[in-house]
Every structure is written in C-alpha cells, then in structure tokens.
Image 1 (cartoon, rainbow, N blue to C red):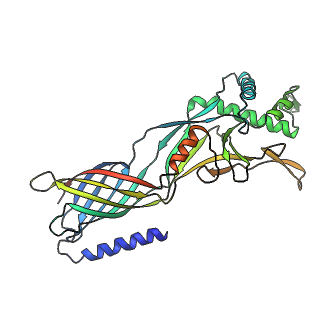
Image 2 (spheres, rainbow, N blue to C red; image 1 turned 45 degrees about the vertical axis):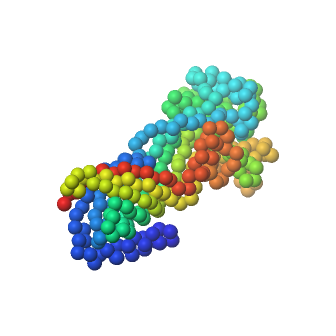
Image 3 (cartoon, rainbow, N blue to C red; image 1 turned 180 degrees about the vertical axis):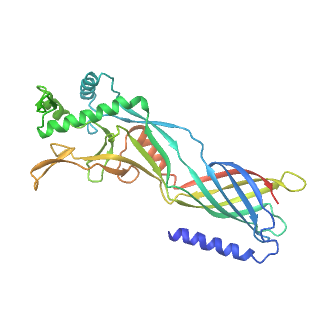
Amino acid sequence: MNQVKGFLAALGLILSLGVSAQDYFSHMDLGVNVSTTGVGADIAMPVGDYVRVRAGFTYMPKFNINSNFNVDFMGEMDADKLRRMKDMMSYFTGEPMKDNIDMKMTPTWTQFKFLVDIMPFKNNKHWNVTLGFYAGPSTIGEAINDPSGNTTLVGINMYNNMYMKACMGEPMFRYEDSNGNYHSFDVQGLDGRLVDARMMGAYMGKFPDGSRAVMVPDNNNQAKAELSVSKIRPYLGLGYTTSLSRDHRFKMAIDAGVMFMGGSPSVYIDNVYRVDNTEPYDMISWDNEKFEWVEQTPQRIDLTRDVTDVPGKVGDMVSTIKKFKCWPVVSITFSHRLF
C-alpha cells in the first residue's frame, strides 16, 4: 500500500507542474495498441509542454497452456498399487480412469492503466520517460481440469469416500427397503485393501515439517488452480513517438518498460490435505474430546511459498513463475488526434 501511495504522490506532483501551461488539455488522441500485456486502447492528453497523461485498458486474448497432475497414493507413486485400485474403480464405475489429471490454464488478464509521459527535451518531443501503474483483479490466470478427465476425478472422490468408510469401520453400502428400513452391507476383503492403499489424489509437494500436500477433487469433482499477483502493478518505461502524417494527426508510439508484480506470483490450489506418514490415517483423525473420527479440513495452499519439491510439469511451471517478479512490457500504439 505504501508503494501505491508513493506512486500516486509522484503522479500528482508531475501533473501539478504542468497545470499552469496555457495548452492544458489542448487536444486528445485515441490509440489502439498491441503489447506483451495483450491488446487494448487508450486516450492521451497533454498537460503542459512536458507532460502527457494516458488512460486505458489492456486485455489478454484467451489461449490454453497444458499441464497435468499425476494420480497416486500420498505421493508414493506405486505403479502396481495404482493400477490395481484404478482397475477396481474403473470396473465399479464402468468408465476408465487415467493415471493423471490434465489441466488447461487460461489467462484472465484484463487491466486498467494510467500512465504519465515526461518529455524532458525542450526541442525533441519524440522521447519520453513513463511512470504509472496498471490495475486489475489479482487473479490473472485460471486452470481447470480438461473435461475428458471427469471420469477420473469422479472415480477419485468415490474411492476416497469408500476409503474413509473403511478407515472408520462404517458399512460401505446402505439401501432403503420398501418399508423405510435401512440395511447396510460390505464387500468381503474390500476394507483391508482400501486401508492398505490409503488416500488417492495428486501429490503437490512437501510442507516445511515434512508432511505431504495431496490435492483431491472438490465437491463438484473438479480440480482448479489460480495464478495471482498484486492488484496494483507500478510501471516504469521509456517511449518514442513519431508522426505518420504531415498534419501530425496520425502517430505511432513504441514503449518498452517493466511492470512490477508486487513480488513473485502465487499459484493457489484448493482441497489440499496435509498427510503425515507417521499416522495410520490421513484424511481423518481421532478427536479425543468427541471420541469419534473426524475428517480433516482441506486447505488452500500457494505452490510457490507453502510447499517445496512440486513434481513434474507443474513443478517446472511453478519454478518459472516464481522468477517473474516483474513483467516486461513492449507495446506498439497507433493513435489518431480527435481534436
């Protein structure tokens, strides 16, 4: 917040220096641009002889980045055990289960921008130094499972529900007869197999205390992730503007600079269980006060800060994302003077 106040104070000082000029807001330019932040539009107005203000928006077109999570048992990656349990659930549901959860990440990057161009040379108005900020929702990207993997996610939730019943000694199946009476029954030998296999999910890394982070599908049988940064992103850059027509009504501007993201981006995932290999159970624990088994509360974690050793393609992506504390901005703007 102090960083934002500092930038706003600097912008206010810059604007106050140009207010006394007679050509205050003497004309307005409308521009469209293409940049590394997407496509957008803005308006530009002079404030005195040495200052120009720009305000507008940018929008990142939709595209997909593919990744995946491996399905396993608490990160054990026991291929034979996974095959046996997967085959069992495939036979039970009537649909095949996959060994991984395919994800599609899509940018959701729409930003407002407010920029102040300072033209320091009296006889050369082509060059400018730019100070300002971009602002928008903190979530700039979302990932959700590919629909082709819905059967796998449903199968994981069904399996974990059966696993918890086996751990707590509850009957696996229950039905109501025509008289309104409930009857329960189990499948011989199933409980032991489930308890031995343990929880099914996607291993996402280790917490500082050594326990494992295991993600399971949510109540809608979906897997999701979000990429988040600061809502206010200060900008510092350099620009060059040239006329495309003799009357100077058509112009082209090239800008290059840096947008500061407020530190390393965060990659959030929900429905994560903390699994400790020293405990006999992982999704449930014994409540000494209530004398009953209770389910853990799944949590939301940040893959860039809360855990280490994130595996596979997701781990490679997280390692890359952590390096982007600032975003390079290169843009080309074509503008037309409205008045």
